[in-house]
Image (cartoon, rainbow over all chains, first blue to last red; front, side, top):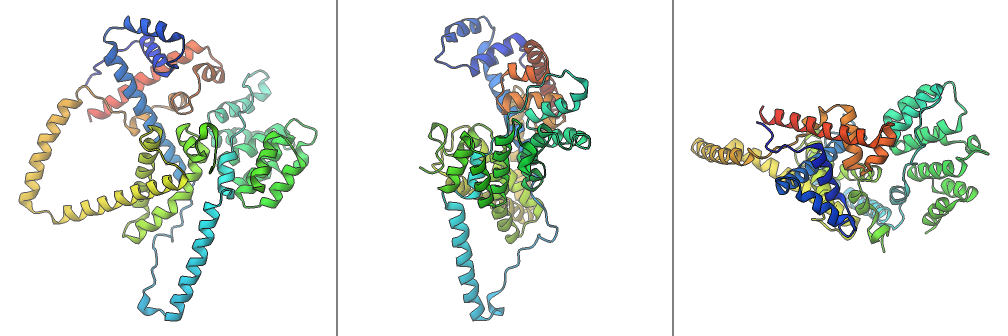
Amino acid sequence: MKPQIEITQLEWDLIERYLDHNKASDKTLLLNEELTQIPNVDAKIAHIKKVREQIEDRIRQSKIKEFHEHISVDKNDTKVNILSPEKMNPKLIWYAIAVALVVSFGVLWMFQSRNSPEKIFASHFEADPGLRTVMGASNEYDFYEGMVVYKRQEYKEAINWWQKLLPEKTENDTLNYFLGVAYLAEGNAEKSLEYLEPATKFNDGIFIEDAAHYTALAKIKLGKIEEAKDLLNAHPSERNNKLLNALKE
Amino acid sequence: MEETLNLGQFTLLDAFLTNKEVAIREFYIAQYPKTKYYILKNGGTLENTKDVFQDAFFACWKKLSTGKFKPKNKTEIEAYLFTAAKNKWIDQTRHLTKRNTIAIDEKSYHLAADETMQTSEMEKSEEQMSITLIAFENLGKACKDLLTQFYFNKMSMKTIAENLNIEEASAKNKKYRCIQKLKELALGDDSM
């Protein structure tokens, strides 16, 4: 089957600009005028809309597959054991119900509570935007290669690049900081702390408050709320104060 | 107001609308056990759970991003996701049971109906092209990255070009070529 519609790159760019632009902007008229020059424009717009939607869908599906890699699979965890009531002692049933109720309320409280650690982490974690990737010095090539993939949110790959540099630069604050953030973005809070702690690693450097911020987030993810509070108290900054207030609420 | 964030949306909805990967992934990990428990309890396997949950999660994400589902809070998203997964599993098990007990006559009747439908669908789809996940996965890393940055991370072509250390015009050209390649791969899939 051959593609039904041939769209040139110029047409493609123009139509995408039209689809993405702010309808209230002054450029609307100009864009509309340019569009009228494209033959069969309505069909082309419809085609591009559809392709864009499908690309977004496939990316979402691909991301979902990646998310699943973060689920730990226990091979023995394939059966759900349900105790049959007739085999149970009636007293035990009541105990079981009581325990289940207590646990359910606990879990419910944890998740419904306005500021559960899970919610605080999810709403405050935003990966550091990264450094500008200008590849100058050849000895920093690996670091910037890592930075390029880090900016694409490919944290695993960034970690691979940066891990190679670590044996020679164990104390480098930039390397430790970005490794810590990348591991945290990957959902591995314990590993991120290996690079973000102790805070003295970042003393007198530009990362001290930011490192404290991500260390606190890692601790929140691990449920160590008091430690996170202490850290944020010791390293005030606008977003650290905001995070601290969220923990106090 | 619960989880107030920019534009008055709550955090999770904002994450789905702007494709904030980390927050969406955390939600995926947190919600998976509930569906797993339900499907394992109702005769499914871990593989079934994964497939059903991923389908439901995709459906939920799509509904949210297109604005067809406007939840008021996180609980509504959780409920939607679980119900979608549950219904998919019920459908799947019903379908399997039905298929096992279907009578031969009935079977041939359905086959005939399916064939008619297939022909008209094929006629209709002559002008259509469907980009499959396989086509996207086979695209090659450089193209996948570029399209993901533009269509998923909503980065500007200027920023993408800066990250790649190339001119904006070259980045646009690369993007166009990647889309053409993807369409070719998709058409290859269609003809299979």
